Length: 288
Length: 80
Image (tube, rainbow over all chains, first blue to last red; front, side):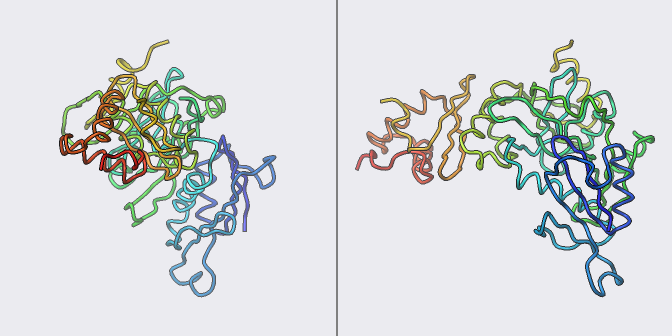
């Protein structure tokens, strides 16, 4: 069994595993953020991904995920163990984090202005997130926006970007120099890969105000179509993607209202991520 | 009558500044509802609802009953 400390601001994880595939992927994807056990001064979440016991360890081996002593998922095939760890990290934050209002959303920033991309699976959110992260934008998160209660300030939680099926080929073509995890085949999302985003130490800790909320929908072969949403429409859509505002009570509700009041809200149908990037940079973000 | 008098205890209302609607949050049930009425429109609808719900158009009356069912507004002031 090997144990590592993983620095993923604003959280520290301790990860234990006896699965060589997980160890290899942790080293490839997290590089400078991965430390020997007991290096970081405090740990927020203790996670483990381990082989199942008994015969299953040798015949079609499976992996189990634990957060402390709790096992939230059923075991998965060994080849999906690293993806399971990534999903487990998302699960742990979504389940236990109470210091932030959490929205299921990609988050990127440029010129210290953050843009949220809340969207359901299949909308092309992660592909667009990857494109922007490798083209001059700072990745805050591919999965969740961590918003400070009572403000419209989002905190970076930069993690590997999860790409699925056809996006995997596209990403290998677009970003040949990037670090990719092994492919987790035949998961419930199809084939899945994780790609390490470009992050620098200075940007890992820099919060940014939310300037815009963009609800993206990928529509093959279509021209870009941008519709401004009024605040009530934006709230209606945003609430569908909010994880824990109900647990935070009125403070969470007031935070969502404040975010919507302060941001430009748009729905974008697109087929080319370059069109979206050009629109956001020219028409939405204020230039320094 | 101010709109907050129609709301149950623990219900918060946020009217959007662009007048596109308002959103309600019930702290007890943790339900949230966005309505595409401004605060003043909602006040008119609720006032009418509590006076004589039969005079409201069907769609607005059904919204009021939904608010009632989900404990956003008081049940006791509805006209018999």
